[in-house]
Length: 299
Image: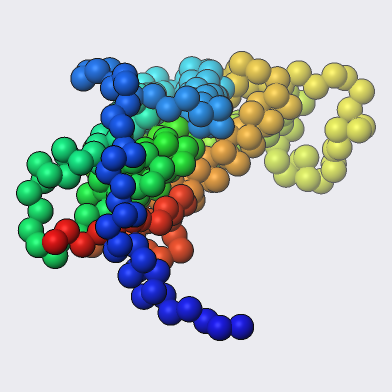
């Protein structure tokens, strides 16, 4: 089997007939200026809805399970304001990241007239996307979900139902940061809530049966030996039943831990990309939807 050098393909790509500007016809209906950008992708829309649902679920558990039933007014108000502010900023950043044009290259602009208007210098190379028939700027990549070439495309994120590119990367970075912060905040509050309520319920149990901790240890009273129904729920811990409260808090812990790890990693990689002025898809093998570019030496 004979191996063909990679530069052979580059030589073929540089042949003038591969640009074929006469085959590029501008789309009949271009998107008017000011029109909202929205990707109609079923998977992305479902992921965006799940994202909002998880944030609202955390909001529900934090408010109605932990903060509102608490007797510590200052604790509830401070943590409620902080958590709600972070949640609002996270959802606002999510909307901006989802509804902002990430930097789409005009579709079908690889026409003969447009190429001549570029006034290219001799020997200068231009790149054409064979799928959307566009002249691709440097570091632009084609996304098969958005069906457009995106300037400085980092990756296509289903959680925001959009590409992360030149125009919306800052909103995506803010979104990951706020989600990481509210996840950490929720985990801390759940930890304090568990410690406080276990201590409170144990104290109430002893006071109900008129025992001290030492007497309980000596008598070794078990719940199976108690004939009377146990009604020692602490209303300041939760307005729900103990099993429901535990299930809601455990689910919130799992959600918070999972998204804390995920968004922290994403936030770190995005900050690194910004500091090094690199896009995630610029590295070989890391672009989600790589497309071969067609180039031509303009003589």
